Image 1 (cartoon, helix red, strand yellow):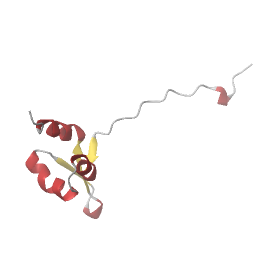
Image 2 (image 1 turned 135 degrees about the vertical axis):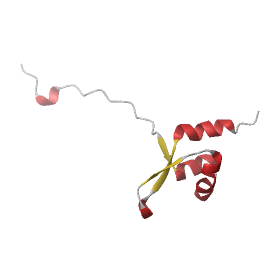
Image 3 (image 1 turned 180 degrees about the horizontal axis):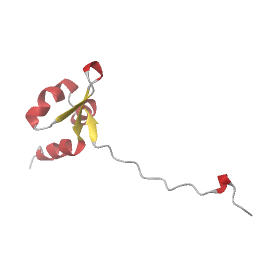
Image 4 (image 1 turned 90 degrees about the vertical axis):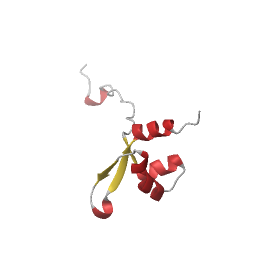
Length: 77
């Protein structure tokens, strides 16, 4: 008996991929600050933003690892 096309096993599912970049609003929520605070203070804190798009549709994104690294540096000893 030949296998039917629907009898093939399902391909292995890949685990979800952790996003590399965070939107400004995500950073603000994580830090319990406003988005305007993040826009204003990010460069002073050493967080480099990546602008994607133009005009009203532009977004500023931040590397998740850099945000968490900065947060670790703020730890009170």
